Amino acid sequence: MEQEIAKIAERWDAFLIKIENRFHEIVNEANAALPALLLVENFDTTAFGVAYQGIETQLKELISKISDTYQEKVTPALEEIQEREEAAVEDREGSLDEFYARFYPLYEREQNKGLTLQHQLDRELRIAGIRVPAAAAHLLHDEARKALAKTFQCTQCQAPLPLRNNFFRSYYQTCDYCQTVNTFEPGTIARNVEHYALHALAEEAAFEEALAYYDMELKYRSQRDDESPVLSKEELLQCYTAYAEKYLKARIEIIPDYANQYESDLASRIEHVRKWTLGEHGLDFSIPSNEERSR
Image (tube, rainbow, N blue to C red; front, top):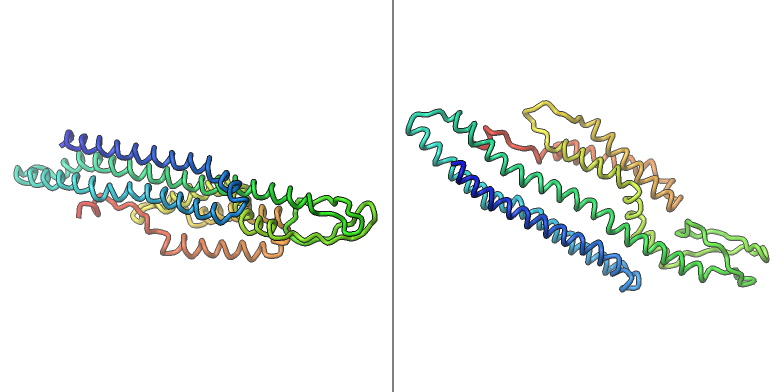
């Protein structure tokens, strides 16, 4: 039995290595090409968004192949061995408990290989989902600032006027030369920065908190109903709140007007987590027990 499972494990290992290598190839290509695409498209975010969605779909499909292949190839092969060995044990009136003590650790070892890589790549996808859009957002933000700085001049004397860091909203600027009060209008490019870049830059600012919440949520979802919980709902909610606060405050640093809706945005986000993560929908990733698998 052990030799048969070893051969299955060898093929399974080779498949997992192939998936991991291909995943990293795609991520590296995205890191190199997507921000540059924004430059090629003259800072039109539509093409970037379509390209990133396509890459994200590819990565998710690779991750899904892990569980699909395990269910389609590995599980049937292991269960065939299990059924055959169980029958042999019963024929000789042996102990099924002794067989299970040998078999299930090997079964779980192969299952855990897939789960471990799946979780690893899910986490790397989350990281890429922050870093790649943020890199493009910085390019867009900088380009908007340079373009607006060239055109913001006093309407009276044509003297160049300084551009504020927060140039997403209209504001008044007094000319140092003639004291004329000028109205700054951000225009399409700056509004496009707000539309696209705001979320990406705020996510980047809350990077550590986002990953901390990702890791804790995974641990929470992995808890089994038949075991004492390691993480409580309150602990997970506190971790999420730290992320949400950092994210929302980062938005305010970019656009101060968002301070007016900070409390309502925070409450809405927390309520969403309460309902969909901490409620009955939050326990659908529990790992089955040995007894459940043998039924």
